[in-house]
Image (cartoon, rainbow, N blue to C red; front, side, top):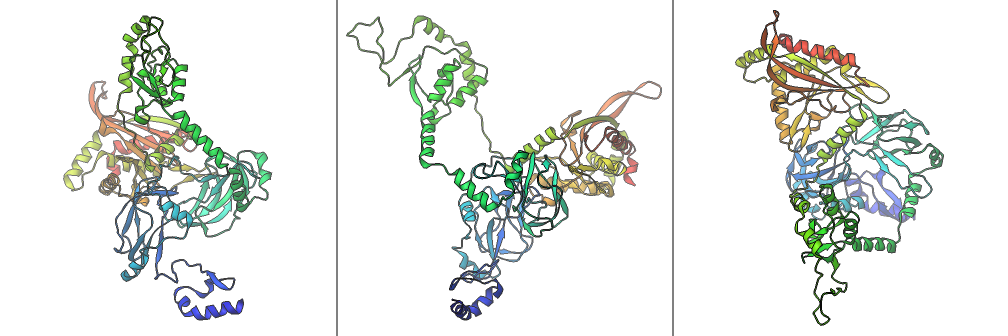
Length: 630
């Protein structure tokens, strides 16, 4: 066999050496059955595969909104191949190589494209493009994902770092902790140090290990409670790919010993065995679902047919609701259970009339009819019942409510992430709030004078940004973040500015704002705001920040409190500037331009006195704006 293999290698050696290093050849049996290649192939010209990158630290999948290149187009470094909707924003997928686009493997409109999934292929020569007309990736996962561009919307809005595992088989319920993308360009990382050991309890926000990315060393925070059951990758391991399982957690400490001999291969086999369900049982469940929701024709008191499912009828009867007053949203307007639930939630509950007749059942003859009289198709309601039906006051009101048209809008990744992060912030961060009034007369005067001298128009918000940054330099404890086992204090004041867009709220950053002049801040903010509204922000322009400003003064809002943008520890809510009467030195009334600001603080990091000191320094800079010009 070995001689035969060597002869084959001798015959094909010139061709193989041209396209792959010789040491990558794998001998399996009498012939070469597998040749692992990164970017080259013996049957195709030289090419490179483009994989979905991590365009935000928490991104695990993205939606391809639009391709800006087509097959055959030339590509240079810096060109944007396509627009990708991440969990943060819509971001351009920039090219790092030159060549020609040979094949698009994931069509426009595809959703849930995982980080690392093959998206496209480029070649160095335009003449090679035609060779990839029928190119397909050999990965089963890739093929199945690429064939479903209109996938169902993602059901989870939180950035998932854990993968729930099978609960059956030889292992108790557990979760797999995979390596997340900790920087926008991260493709792999080095596990520098474990901060936990097997059996340790973990809580949301705990840092279990330190990961060296292509940017810096970052802590891997867990998002759930439990216990570390197994460490899968030893400390010091390098070049760990995204998604690699680093550890196993379990909700109960008693389960930890069960994972002493845990392996991913063994768990997969157990999961496959325990999760397999007999086809007959699945079919029975599907049939039962169809039966439960199949509409049945009924007859109302007015003689009109009502279509409702058995579940809806039973639920309506139980809650004393007349189905004739419920608007159906099922097939052909039939009533399903959720329609009755929505009707009940509207507050109108007309009493149910005499049980409606099912058409398929035999009709009873009324006693007043002669034996020879033809049987009617429906019963005549008793006089008392007819009178009750003739004036259903609550029913007419409920019909108006039920008939209110509405539109369901599918959640974008960005909106899901905003919802998850704000809920996380309000439920896990101990907020407290400090409000202060600042006098704006001097700021308004200095602003007017500066705008006469330069082309870039400075806004009041630009003064607020500069004053906030200088106050953070004076009170560095407020320029810090909570990281579970440590507090990180920053040197530079990177100010995030809340900008409302059609897709949701996004916070572009003015980096190192304390060192910038007011004119530079004004031009930077305008550029970032325009990019944000056009969905053109790059990840490095909105990821990060140490402090956030949310200004609703332009909408006439006097005062409000804002939700902290984690992992930051504070956010400043800015109201409008208004004229108010205040006493002068002699007790006589005078008019001042005043503005109320409210600082929201994370009490784990920023103590009350620290928050108050920061507001004092902010007030000092705003009321003496000449200090902002130094």
